[in-house]
Image 1 (tube, rainbow, N blue to C red):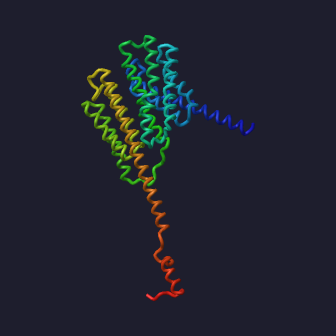
Image 2: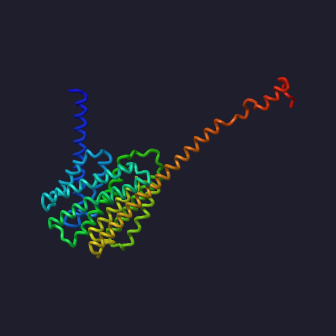
Image 3: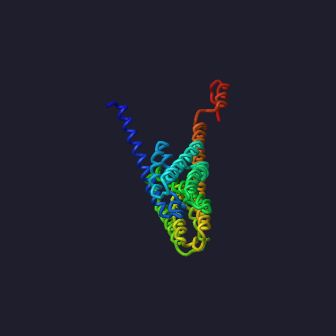
Length: 339
């Protein structure tokens, strides 16, 4: 067997493993997301598989699309209502992240998301625009199969679209952060204590949401997001936003806390408004802070180099005589003038 043939087989085996891994993660996260379904057993306000699918495309490339299609088919197959409808829904769930990936590639998206334009692209192109495909295809196919009444078409479309978009805005940043995570070094104990305090405050906020609490309590989540973005940037803001939104989804599906005593449509509007605002705050603010820190570091480096150049070009105090002193010596016949 030649070296080229072995390399081809190795690349093929690696691609197959990547496809299987994406399909397994899509299926597992889909089953987890369906635990909080709201409409017809398959429409949920937070759909994590879209975030996993887009992350796989960003990190590996478009060759993993069969894994997305396989995962979407396996998740939707038991839900019905018929094989053609399930196939169409799986197709829409596959095309949506592929569209988001293509749009992000055209804008020069960086997976580090350390620029403001990267955060904007992920929000408006990766989340809001790309997920229009899956919501429209899925809701339309259910309606054509008479599994979705006409009066619930638009509420279902709204929950489907926002749920898929929230999967991108909340799950993808966390996965990209984990991908570039490194073991922290030389971190002072005060920094660890601050991170632990932020985590404890986030957990306390979630517990309050799951209990009887007024709707105004939702606003208390934004100081936490601001704290996480300013002090920890994307590694702190992305998990904080995902945790807060998860607690809000649990409270909405259980109809507790701020979501008690309201209609499904009213709860979904409040929930997705909170989730969208939380994702926007975390992504945009952390990207802005990271961009500012990078610019400040570049300015400091430029100042340091300029200072070194000036110090090298400045004359030494005890160096050779200036040209004027040399001219005076020449006029005196080479004799040094007495002081």
